[in-house]
Length: 156
Image 1 (tube, rainbow, N blue to C red):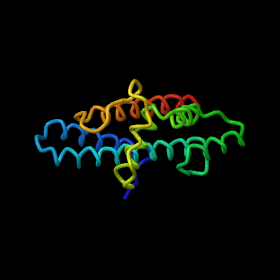
Image 2 (cartoon, rainbow, N blue to C red; image 1 turned 90 degrees about the vertical axis):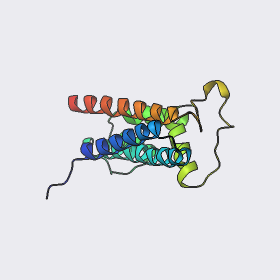
Image 3 (cartoon, rainbow, N blue to C red; image 1 turned 90 degrees about the horizontal axis):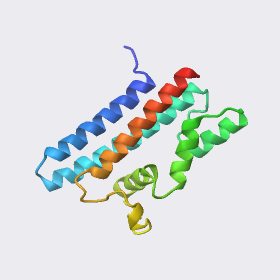
């Protein structure tokens, strides 16, 4: 039995999220759409973890899932990993898609209160009943980031 590569596992998470989002767009059941969106958010957060595993493997890092720790490790090794710098920047800005994905994950899966009131309305990506638009944006941005990382790491 062969095990799947890290990239393949990340791709599977992204594809599952894509399918859940698509299913939510065609479903007429509001209660089902809530569950599909929650599931898609989980898959997207898992795909982000998959990306971090790919980064860890490509650059011989500890394999952790914390961007700050991985970035500190790269600094100790005197290497630059653009995707980690980008993720750290995105996570530091509450209005970024990455921060909003993380917030959506925490709201859905850790029963936290939504922080949507904290983000100013002109920077708000769509939340709640936006027919999956924000989750679709998270998917598109994450796929873009994964592909850019893989292209950069193939040159490394």
